[in-house]
Length: 336
Image (cartoon, rainbow, N blue to C red; front, side, top):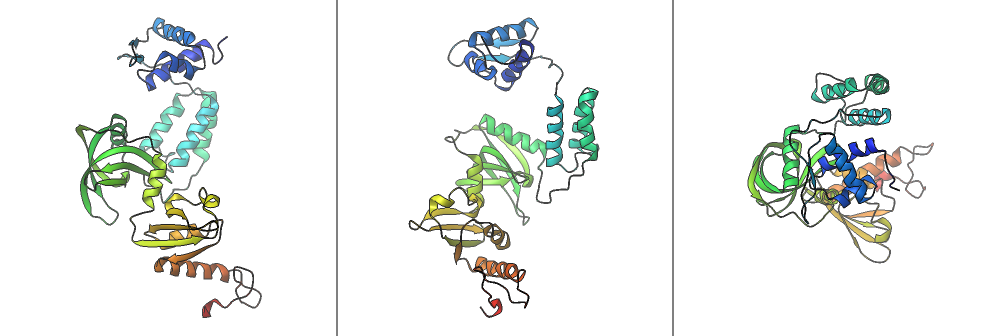
């Protein structure tokens, strides 16, 4: 006996899956629905009987697709789904409660379309919550973002016009690989033909996008988040080098990739090398490392770590005003 949702819910889920995956085969549809392939075909038949134009193509490259002219059924949300959606929007946009903004207006339409008993809790959270703005967040133009995402999915080259944080401008032809959201900022991970290298551009700084008629071969499967974090650790003004007093295996998954590259020195230590444009930020990240370390390269970082460390030790001075060293003994930092 097939498991999974009931016939009506299964039909709606099947429609959603086919719409999101044009050309999906019967066996893949069955796997998504959690039923047999025969039951999946019956569900497609139910949709066709209801007047929904589901087309199918035979052969190894065939599958199900939704025809043009389909009028979608009304959206249905459970109370938990509606509340989770509102919370996610509020978390990402501090202006989500303002109906004058695009996000606030869209969220208001969704809440108003929900049944009263479902909308009540979601609307209460929306009106009563006062999310603080994330000053580090930089939200890009929605149309620019949409164009880049579509180019990524369709493997189309694009030319981007870019303005850096310092105000300089340039344009480049790129192969758009992926769009990544990291800590409130949106990035385009791509191959730049102008630079002949892999690059990551902040989408909020993209001034204009023009889709090329030329396509590109997608890269081998890769982790776009890992690629972005590795990219953010190189190419900055100040070089850094540290020795960590722990085996590589013990820290490989605990040191953020944005800090640089880890490599083994010996069985008990490893080296972290990278670059940074902000030694103060880098020093703050080092303070959270779970193992002892020593800065061996980068005078800017050495100075910053010394200042940060002095301030931290001064904050736990004993009753005579003498600060403590890392091992708990008193030390005079002014003479060191």
